[in-house]
Length: 62
Image (cartoon, rainbow, N blue to C red; front, side, top):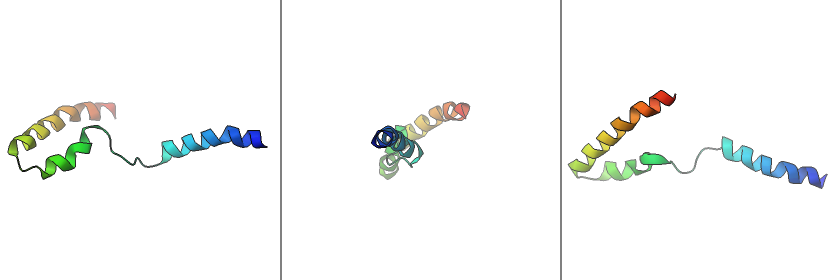
């Protein structure tokens, strides 16, 4: 039965990895907190342009 456990162990790890909540957010949104706390208005404007330019591609995938 040890061979069965050695076969199922990687599958069990993969299952938990796929169905667990991600610990780190990926993409441009990991910078959101830094941009939000920045007092510079130019950074805020550039962030809004970046978010607006990526929004249609995200919606089209859904």
